[in-house]
Length: 231
Ligand code: UDP
Image (tube, rainbow, N blue to C red):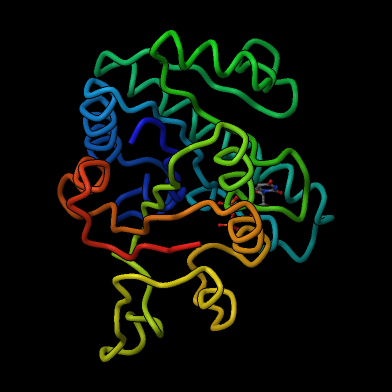
């Protein structure tokens, strides 16, 4: 793959703690990114914010404000993961759809392309910049904009199941499933808005477990053990 958009959930950064950061987990992710980048794959990254905050969980404060906090949580996550990527020797850049002073660069497709040309790993922080959206939507949006070959969806579960494997021990994992079926059966790989956009823009997705050893590298190498979402 020449170019991929890797989506990491916020919770995936937290390891077993489920909240905040787990440095060992993120170091492992950074080393995998380094390997695929050295082999010539350009990597864009979107990170969720659920290890800190989810807009819809607050019933007290205004949803717009709650979502702003969520978007800022994704900025913190990107700063953290970006710097650990730098620690392992990668060059990185963080873009946001809103100004964050000197912390990030304001998103511009042209500048992103220049940075990819300079061999940088690109972080798309701050989601879409709008409330009522999610980092799933931001993932598909940026993947389409940068013409990624595929979205690599690294999750806590190792693929898409016909029912929740945490609840149903007989849940069956799909090796391959169409995005239409994901939508029709509400299989919840990504949220509905993002799924529809994937379908309209014909953006394939590879869903796999982040906990599995070398799963990012294996997915880029085609030794894939998760669920392929076809378009
Ligand atoms: N968020 C938002 N707009 C976006 C992306 C994210 O408002 O374009 C907010 C929203 O509050 C969300 C939080 O940021 O709950 C964290 O993003 P993530 O996609 O991880 O949320 P989740 O799907 O886990 O709620």
